[in-house]
Image 1 (tube, helix red, strand yellow):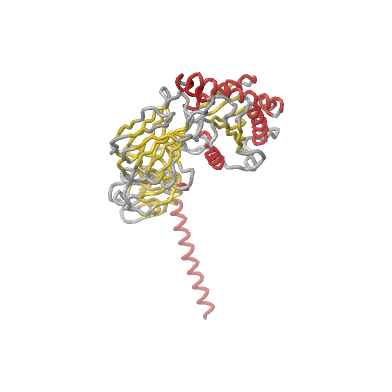
Image 2 (cartoon, rainbow, N blue to C red):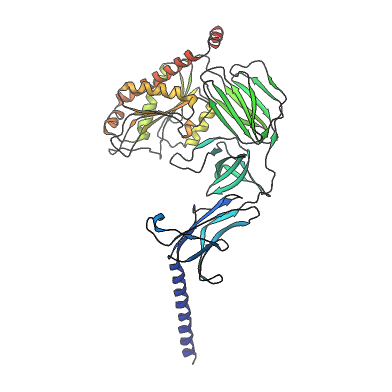
Length: 508
């Protein structure tokens, strides 16, 4: 009897499981996929758009969130696919959602759901009444303009000091949106932030009266603030000037004291382009800027403007030299096996010898085949503080026909260095690929000194590769790059103000 009962019970359980599996299969057929767009975790605030997409059977009644309808798109908008549904919800003040997935449903009527699914990504609605703040951390925190990505990362707005207070108003994946000022935002990666408990006060500050002083190396601008606020700097030309916007700051500056010992700064002043943006304007005395650094001392913003070298010639100049890639970072490789890391080191070593023969002091990021992260190279050069930096690379393209030499710079004020080297290297007979600006590369992002990246030639092109692997041509490249730096110095001297040149001549 017990064995018969057990057999009936097993058959009943099997029927239940099979019916449940059938129901699950029907539900799965009704919803093939459902996700937020983009399909990643998000923080959204009032006015932001929650966008969703579902793929399922055509002709269904589909909802998301709390019963909001989704629209089935016509095949003309989906490359002929049917059953594609989209929905948008604009977040309103008072909406609450705490890091939860989005619910999707296919309905038979107002009360019966034929199928349900949840997004894999989670969404949080931020409350303006409990601001989410964060502090920057590390030595290389930075802001991005937007969410764009490529092999060089997102386009960088600029670096920030540590412990800068940021007001976060959104998140997409691993990037947080930062409110800088009214109608101005930026994005920051999560790995350079430390989140603070929600509900802190949004950082603002009045500015104090500030001073401008000189020491043995720099002209220094000190702007007292009440908090370590975010900032953006721009090195402009014609006329040459450094402009620093401090976000969240409003002027209470009653005077600016300019003390003795200044050599590079002219008549400094400030502007208030909008109520929550304080602009520091620093005119420079020379056509060629030689670098600057911004950081905080407590809550006082410090801007250090570098002076030109004592003499504009290679002898006595300190040059940072970076051989691209190295170690596990091979870089580009040709069809015949030529490796970028090997070629860059060979050229850089020859260039080091050429520069030292001319009397320059050379500081290298690597002298052997070792792995050095780009961030470590930036920090090393920041510590060594050269007069200028050169980064040596070889180029590569998906088309074997592309060839030629090129140089790269980030800031227009440093273009003369890149252009002088480009023109000199062209004298080797290499075709010209171009002088490229706004280059979003770590070593070009440094503001502390003029810098240029040299893509000597294309290893992916047979003609260029044949030259690159030839030690005699590597030597020729080194000589031309050295000549390019010398021409940059000569051109800088020609553009410099006569009063400055006479002053230097009297001192030396």
